[in-house]
Image 1: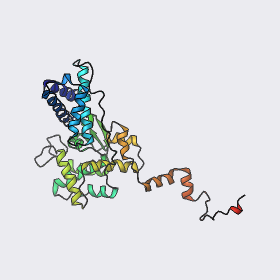
Image 2: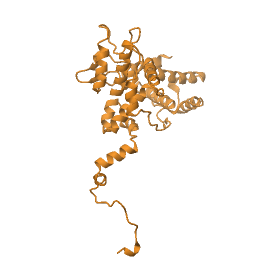
Image 3: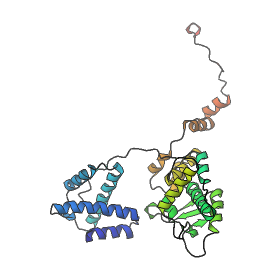
Image 4: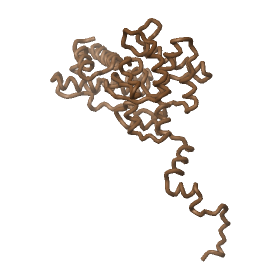
Length: 311
């Protein structure tokens, strides 16, 4: 990788708090563009809009997902904008790049009974059972991302106030998130077994921090042992948001809980069932209450309309 790219990635890490995943992805995307330009005797500072479009078109021939193309466009925009700010180029050739639209997908989620069954599913012996139960209860109870759970330290848990401090959320934003008594009970049992030394909240067999990959395995295996289809950690997070929304929480509160930067991201969870919508309407709408309670005086049976009797 070139010195120029190294400088840019250092800025992303130090000043913008980019995650390791973002750094790897952006680094690979930009290195691929640089290699294509070098084949033509060019460099990044001489890149033109047509070069970027040709590069993205070549990448698209491999049929990557739209989200992958959007990330590549974001990487190019960010990098060339930084080059302009550093005085390395006068204008960004990526400013006019357009990202493909993503299809709106309803996140997969579990109903309340299946979610409750899953978090109670661990069947291992001893400390593994207690760790996995605490892990699943916290993921569902607080709606955390898998990377956030892996990064938690024991000091991030406040059992007195039922709060978890997420210090390494998406975009490196810190937030405090509530969880319920079931998670507090499971966490208390697990934390009493932690060794005196060390910071990580969830440990693996060797005493190190539990990885995101291991958490994926635990969630999937717990579902299978419970007779459910394999699910990933995102399903627990989506389930938490869905159940909060169905119970009356507003989208802004869910946005804060999940750590979404944009409310539009949270709106994916607004897939309330028709039954729930009818229930809310009957209890909250003035005419809904009248119809449900019979206060409107509506007849039990409507007589057929006779035009001869009409005034």
